[in-house]
Image 1 (spheres, one colour):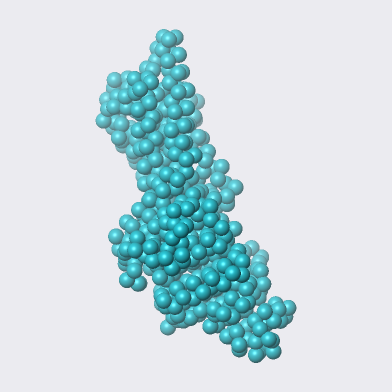
Image 2 (cartoon, chains in turn cyan, red):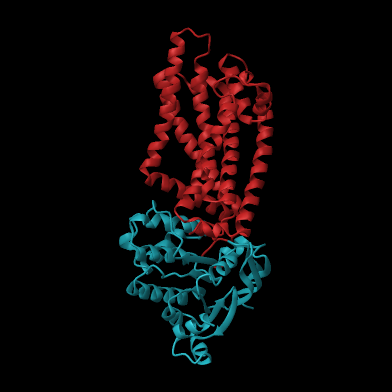
Length: 239
Length: 273
């Protein structure tokens, strides 16, 4: 049974169909990438899978449970980070992590926060306010928050969008390591093709709210006669 | 479920999530010198304004129970803070672009609102403690002069304030951030109608009908009765409590509807942009 199973999801905003009959699954421990142009429906899809947007049609089952009916049970084993979401700026890094550790009802919040502070090298920053951190440092805090509950499913919406190549590379390394340690599955959107190539086992291309191509990076490159994923992206995007 | 987390539907997990909201909001309060200052500043300004007016009226030998105004200012703060604090605590999540993080956590709406209400209660207690001390120090007015009615008076106002705050939050969920002015100002619409500084009888007849539908009016009338030496009007308090139960249930329903609307129309996602 897949960890996440989304079946024929539809979402319309007025006359615009943002997601049009999309089906998607993620298996235990699998890393799945969702690619597409801006407005392809990636974020709407992720937000439906997280319960932030109610689909007009279709069904979402996570860990075998209907998301709409078992929201708390499902979300206690899921986590999320995105480049466009922030954390309470006035709080210290440690306070933010402590607060979210309580929201995820961790058994031993202090010990887990200490572990993640060490994993993401946040020790020197733990007594600083979030608003005083750089983009890269904030992303590290966001990702530490996203791993607090050792989620079985981690949803990341352009997690490294605000980072320079060096910081992005470090974050990818940390994420892969942390996900491997936790055995987490990941669903990622990104405009960084190298990131997707490096991290994802399976990739879906979206256009007009539908999945138009799927496979591993190598399979997609072979199918489109492309040298790399970036070329595949351009070919798919330009029809 | 991983061994790392408590069973998500257990009482222990629910309690931890609610306390997480309360603890987070108090930590944010502690870290914000402006918000800490505000606990002292506005109540003191209001107390000074109405306190000096009371002193002036006393010198003019106005046939008037002078403590009415100071008592009214103190109880008005309960209503205003209960309403504004839950709205502001919610808006803080919007302003800091943290609302999506909260909404994708296992925190249920009921737990979130309980956390916000407890935080608002804490802030009301802080503000009233400060104001009561100042009222005693500068005007010799002791809150204990409200007798055994003090706690139920405050309880009724607290609940009514929460209901008004929920209307403000619901407006933001329904109409977006532009509606935050409603969250800030709704409680002030209640001010002229609730007979805070004058008896409800001075209002035109149609407005008196509206006033009696507000739990706060019964509290302020009751306060004047007690300060005039009368007994605590328990029947008024019972009526106000009944109204409160209806309004709280209705505004919780309104919140649930507004949240559902926001989810159906993708408005929650836009709070993250």
